[in-house]
Length: 296
Image 1 (cartoon, one colour):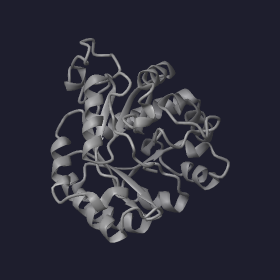
Image 2 (cartoon, helix red, strand yellow):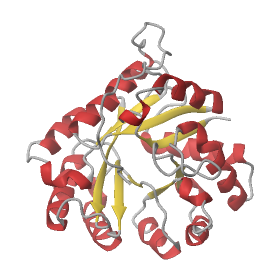
Image 3 (tube, one colour):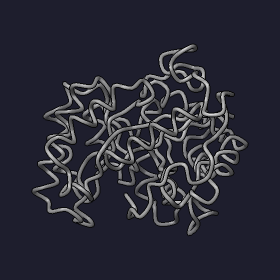
């Protein structure tokens, strides 16, 4: 069984004590590929550094809406430049968070527009964070949809009506461990109407661990529990759910069939790792992107 974690944050300091062991457990569970998603310019660069050292790991370059207030006018362009690296497979996460309102809403909206404009010039698909802001998110995505390479709604936990809104714009939906929670009935109803070729899965690690790991630090190895739940909803095995969602992720991110090789075997991702072997995970403390709040 091959699993693709479409959204994780293994650069955070939560993983500094045992990042190497987390990588080993992921591989043992069948997680052959994952995308470390940046939260600002610094963590996007760190995510790319991890991708350069670990086969099957990729990066996304973005700016989380929590920190929109500290984004400078130059930062979207810097992220777009970073997204030119073949191992950066998406622009994100970007979007709106009106639940926490960590940055003023007008500032978030301005930042989101600037980031979408920057993303449009990269040729990379976007990864969208949206919380309690579906209407505003849909409006901006509708405005930019024709200039974007693809749209992935990260951590989708809504019901059927919200799903239909995003699906109408051609979006893919990435499902987190919340799907396994008892109170996620509307989300489970939504999953039944999402076309199977639009479904991806994610951990959003270290957050949102699935049952039976709920309440613990999440990590890619725990995706097997989410896939069991998803398979049950789709009437397939966990392995078939993994195969389906991995194929969808490979297609969305434009990654070839061989782990570590964007666009096919022999690509930039097949370069040797830090230790010259091409398959050694980074050691503990390699990221050093600590002190950040949960991206949600």
